[in-house]
Image 1 (cartoon, rainbow, N blue to C red):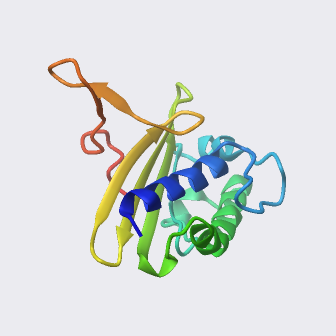
Image 2 (tube, helix red, strand yellow):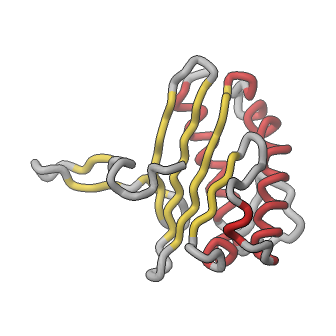
Amino acid sequence: MKHDVLRSVVHNALDSLTSGCSFVFSLDDFNFPFWQFVWSMPDGVIEADLTSGEIPNPAAHSGSIAYRRLEGAMKIVAKELPDFLRKNRCDPRQVESIHARFETNFKRRQYVYIRIVRSGGRVTEDLYSGIPLRRLKILDHLGRIRRASVFGTGLSKA
């Protein structure tokens, strides 16, 4: 399995989840307001381990309805992600962990930081923004379009 294929499959899965109508995962309702739930968190941030379905530091989210819905959605994602990876010719046994950090701010901008660790030790960190999720791009000092570095954005904490 090529690592870039794994990156694109995980991106497609998370794009489907965050878009509001997930066609990849069988969530309870068709119109799942993902970003509204993230917005309602105290700091506008939620982190999740997509391989286990766990959300670290649950005490910070005070057991709100939005948190319980997000927690249920992450459990479904963890359960169905291996099948989605297999359907897209990726071996879920080679994936050690997939962490995502979802952040929204007062300007209603959405950011997703994804960290994929393969069993061979290769680590990929990507930053996406907007709906649909797109890679964040910047201009370098010579005026060329480049991928934004995850480091220095405040999102490299997942």
